[in-house]
Length: 414
Image (cartoon, rainbow, N blue to C red; front, side):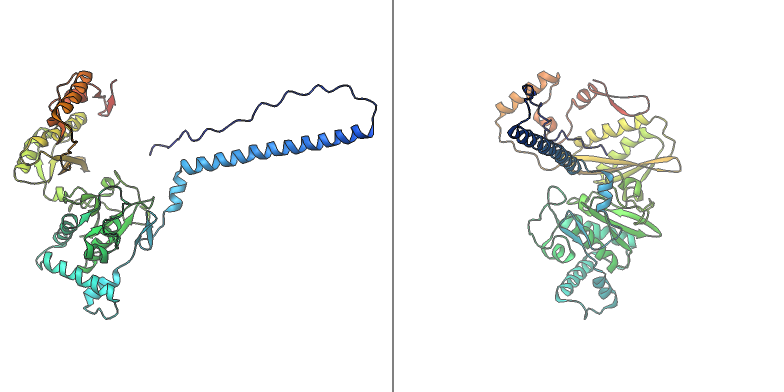
């Protein structure tokens, strides 16, 4: 992570000392003059002490400001806790255990539960009855719960710490199931409740800065990361059953406390993946999947990829091309690579870009803005090019400023 170095408030330096006074040659000692000199000396000592104290306080103040505005790794580590439950996220939302509720479901005895917990159990049981069938495998059950949480619940827009519209219990299963609105802690704890009710081992994970939470789920001997919050409201499967390596692209967490997630078998894209001989077969495979209405797919490249810049550029081109497919005009393509035994799988996920923005401008006003941009950049763009995604001149604009260096890294040319 880049170090944060704010300019900070200006610190005033010490003022220039006043020019020394030109005292006359001392006269023969007289009592009044002796008293005045002693007073001046005391005053000088006192002023020196004040100056030293002021400098020391300025240093303390500056150090405090730097400590406040430039947090270090040690600061982050001090916030983290090596435990799953009773952890507060964003200073407000608490991860609480619900195992007593899932145990009551499994045992069939809810007599020890509070009225509130009994209501939570009933709501969760009703959902399970609606979405789970006996013939489902564990991963099928997980996917059904994921679909319910990411498509049926309201994901509050904005940052992770946003206050939900209901303002009621958004961080626990009771509020999530009753009011249908959740922050990240609500998604994570409700997902875990369902998994534990279904007999699937699951943990709620929090990041090292106590600002976000998600789940670890245990399937056939392997752990996987699943983040329902980030995949709401369209259930793209982008954050479904990830490895540590993929999750680490977005988050940091206590890997010494939480179990390692190294499984790829039940990553949704891999689970539904298609073998391709080389990267040049990827575009048609993606187009075929989109034509079938799929929003998550994977291409397992069976030959070693020797030209990494070409593979990166292929993904760039696909990201722009998806917007020209019927039904996907207002979409974005997200992706990552998985490596196993020296071979790579490209996982692709299509998600919504959001609704078209109404700027409230007249055609003349929009044309004037387009003319100004086109004149400066030498392009021929208009609003239709970018209201849903990349424009016809996307490659022209990008390649005029960026290019690939020898090792496949994107570098600025200008």
